[in-house]
Image (cartoon, rainbow, N blue to C red; front, side, top):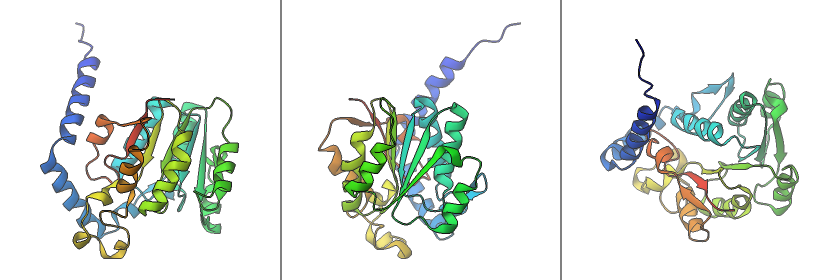
Length: 250
């Protein structure tokens, strides 16, 4: 007895439900409350990737994996290395794909974090550049590590102030190639009022001086990117809802 191949219907339902979830404001508001409660336990700091701390929400890790696998970029640029788990996570996905390099940029790559990365089995797919991410000299170093004709994805996850993120967008978004993704991390901050902001991050965690404000400003300057309604629709209990954009023009 043959079993019906339902992959097409399954995929159609996945897409439909993802978009529907993204339109449900009540669920999103409950998600915001949960994320705020989880922050008291440093929730995003509790995870590791292949033994190295990855300071990310699980939903964002899954979303990043999806877009890397679907687009298979040659180069992934990430600003903000922190403890190294994120660059190693992306390197491991590229290893499965069988190609590619992660270029990690950070203003301060501390010795113990550098050692964690360089001693890891995935280190061969990671290039680290130390310096202010939006400094033209650092941007030039990053660009020099991109082979001609390479497909490029960018993730911005360093200083989350509005002005800094906007400067990064202007510097790195032009490097993203058509069909690949630009990811702006911690857009959730744009949904948090100052009165409700976690105290330990009060300098950054409220509307206005944050990544979503920078992203919205940048999108008024360019028509190269579109917010992906399927990926972003699923991003509840996430740090970066609305932060996954696909490059749709050269």
